[in-house]
Length: 411
Figure 1 (cartoon, rainbow, N blue to C red):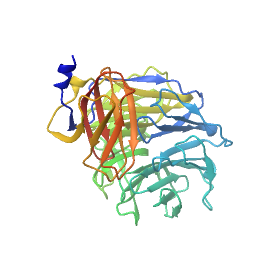
Figure 2 (figure 1 turned 180 degrees about the vertical axis):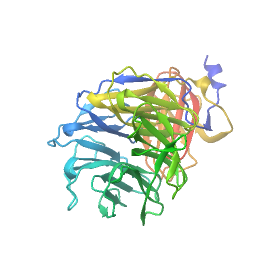
Figure 3 (figure 1 turned 30 degrees about the vertical axis):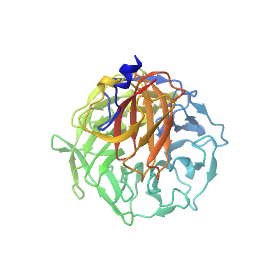
Figure 4 (figure 1 turned 135 degrees about the horizontal axis):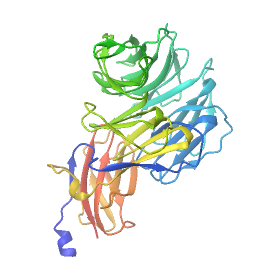
């Protein structure tokens, strides 16, 4: 057997996210409070927040969620990692909370004259730039990982429900204006914020509505989701161009609250436990039935080859992937990993060092057995594997731009 194992050579391959077979599993959150937002900095480490000051965190990929006791009763609406350790949560009446230990403990901070409801927060963790959105046309920005914040003033009588940082220079906020038309705020250089109203059109007909969330991959490619006022239901509007006030949309039977993509794999969710997936970059969508009643799904995060959705009543759904080694798409080797087979530790040389990255090991049943986030500046990772059982493992290595996958034998 050992001789046969020695014939297996590790290959790490450039590729897209691997979701050949998966399902969504209801997880125990430990709370019945509505959960409004979720974020993960690695496959293992995440935080979710909700009504009446609810905060729960996980350090093992959502296997267990730990409640955080906090003397805050405000509804918390958004949460985002600013770095490996720093996490922010925002909520009612200008509530802003900061954790310096991945969500295990929190302190309250304040921004002068910000006493209105804050509804979402997003960071580009590579640059430290972030944005908070909320009521009364609130856009609040930072360029230093949240050490200082600046309020952006505009002339709109508007509410921005969603925030999304695309990269160091591009941020998107979405909501509605005083005439019930979806409104986008965007910056393409982190200097000036511009604003644009648009109508989601369906079959060439203009509809009023509200934008709830956005997912952009760059300046000219993205989606905005929300709900129609009439005839009801939800819309997904592919980017229609800056300055274009009509975006031909896809119509959904329920209002949509959130969207995320991981490569060409996408998920949208919304009211009455509505959940749909796309395997082709958002061109077509398949509706799923998560069997959780009619709970509203509020937010979602895709990371690695898994994902998490949170919603009313303490709902948490985790995407369980059943990836096996023979399902990994093979192409030309791109990085060096040795020795293979391995016994005590594995050395991985990486072609990028400008961002943090996550290394995860999945067993042949597709179960996550090890995950570690490495800081920026490392060109080689030394991973201890002596605690893992013998066998063949799928390795997923990713940062914000790149993903690598492959296999290794542990003896």
